[in-house]
Structures are given as C-alpha cells and as structure tokens.
Image 1 (tube, rainbow, N blue to C red):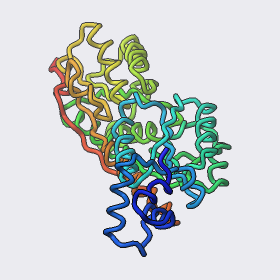
Image 2 (cartoon, rainbow, N blue to C red):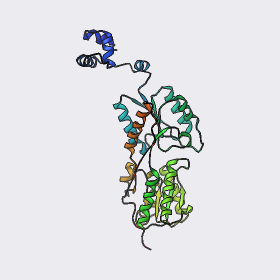
Image 3 (cartoon, rainbow, N blue to C red):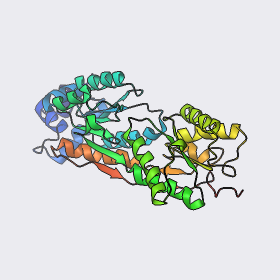
Image 4 (cartoon, rainbow, N blue to C red):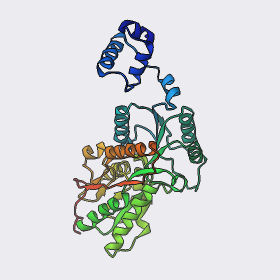
Length: 337
C-alpha cells in the first residue's frame, strides 16, 4: 500500500507538502500539485476515505432507498442521481425496500449508521399519519429528499415529484375527445398519494365534461402487471360495456391488455387503453401504449439540486415537474354501434 511518505520520498518533498496537495491547499503551487498528483497516480496511491471522513466530518456517501431497481420508473431517476453524485465526489449506497415498511426501516437505519451525508427516499406509503423511522431521520438531522409525493408521515422533508393530477386529467380528456363516454379506471394503492392524484385527474376530467363519475367503472388494481390482470378480469365479469380503460400506470395497463387480448378483444378497435409512466416496454408492447411521459431523469437531477441546497443548510421548496401525454396506437375513437 502506497503511503504519503512514499510519495514524499520519491518527489523529494515533505510529507506535509504531499498532504496539502491531496487536500488541494491553496499555498501549494499549481506546478507542484500537478507533479505530485501525477507521481501519486503512477505509484497507485489510493486515498483513505475513512480517514478523510474523520477529518472533514463527512463520508461522501449518499443513501438511495427505492422499492427495487428493477421497477421501471426508478431506473433513470437512480441513474441521474448516481451520475451527479459521482461528479461531485460522492458514492451511492443503494437499498431496496420491496415496498415493505419493516424493510424500509431496516434499510434507513443501516444507512444512518453509515453516517451518510444525505438520503434519497421513495417512501413505502402507509395510511398511518406518522412513521417512526421518518421521525428518526429528523432527529438525526440527515438531509433527506423524498422521491415522489409526500404523505402525512413525511411532509417535513423536501421532495421532487411528477405533477400527476393534470397529467392524468389529460389522458382522460384525450379519451373523451375521441368520443369515449364510458371509461373505466384501474386505480392504484389506496395509501399512495400519486395514485390518489391520478384518480382525481380522471374524475376531474369527467366532471369538466359534464359527466358523472360512475364508481362502478372504478376498479381497484395496484401497481403490477398481475394487479392489472385481476382488475381487467373483474371489469369484464361485471359487463360494464366500457369503450376505454385508463390504468394508473403502464404495468397495470399491460396486465389489463393481456387479459383483454386473451378474451378476443382488439385494442383499440374494440376497446381503447391508456397507461401512465412511459416505461420502456410501453412503446414496444404488442400495441404501443398511449401513456404519460414522466420526466424520470429530470426528477433525479432535481432531487440532486434539492440535496445540494440541503447540504448548504437551506430549506428548499418541493419541486413538481410537468408530464406530457404520449398518444400511440392503443387509443382510437370508439366503434360505432
């Protein structure tokens, strides 16, 4: 292992000079810094990050807590956070909650014990107004950015989120403009604010079109392909005569599509279908899916911008980024009867 004194001996300078170069001290000339850094690189010197952390009282670590990196909506957001963290000299520790509150608590506590300089958390939503682990984060004073809408248990933190309500409203309006009047909605988890906003967007568009909201056309789904399949089966069994289906996200929409196609229905000739999220598979699905393009990468960039402000001691406001509808082949005017 190459030490500072080894570099100093080769360079013909004092250990203190090498130490100052590594700390980018202002009283060392540019030429000396360049020469010693080049020599350190040639010798394979690796700085001791733990020792540096003890001196600076920082770890240069961020914690990223998400349901799973395999969840399509988080991949590009995580990529943006990691890229910007790397540029700023930070490493990222990734933790998966699998949407389990007890695992979320364990993940966050481990990260706090590692003395991370900041946390990015996609919450496990629950109906309870408080959650002990979020109170522990506040008590610990760790700068934290919520990825997604804040619920009552995490309103004290900065957040970055998609403006889901008007985006969902735009999807319903698109279906209405095509001529659909009986539009089913496959809803998401009851505790999730993003699901609540998307459902409200659907209802608001119907009201603006002077149509009553028929609760018989709202089916509880969730967030997975399997949830979409179950909700679509229930919808077909109840013979609702809908001409269009709006799903809370793309995975639910794809699950519904599998069932509809399996029952001999053609999309969009027999029934239109729309999702939300614009995950990669939505564009390349057997029937390219009309959906909402969430600014996933920009959400990660915005999250890092908030973190930078928090690290400076500022109290930034929440950021809500707009999302746009993407019209593809899965929606069309209803078939004339």
